[in-house]
Figure: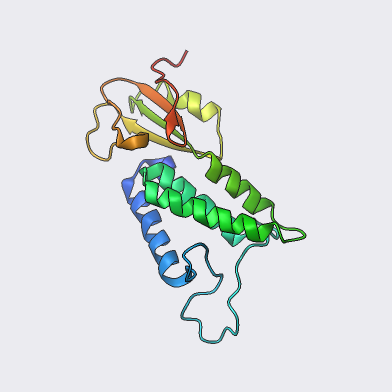
Length: 189
């Protein structure tokens, strides 16, 4: 999640790559055998008598809820449908376990709501004199992944649902929920 937030703040594609790497390491060391959730301890922890899940919220949202959120946000950022399906399966199993808990499940409920309706805002704007980015900044939404690309960019173009590349010849913005986008906005007014 931190790498995705840094990507949103800087538009540096290296952070998106870092997020993919972190998910890969998470899968390597913490993924359960059914591939539907994650253990709190790594698979090579020899001194742990029983591996538990991080499903209970305490002062911060549970590890499981943070993982679901990271999977959903990375899927939205990259347009990776397979990762989106993985996020959905992880959320579904986490919600099943959380329904048996007496308390501490708000983080998982919130992450599952995000998995049900992932939000993405793609903005193509002028780097020096942005007109659309300030509008988006005035309406922050922690559920939304914001992707900003400069006009004329060809490398590292953001992807709309369905693998469609948006045109980058003029200022424009697309707000997408899951695999559906609202009509393009070209004026900040």
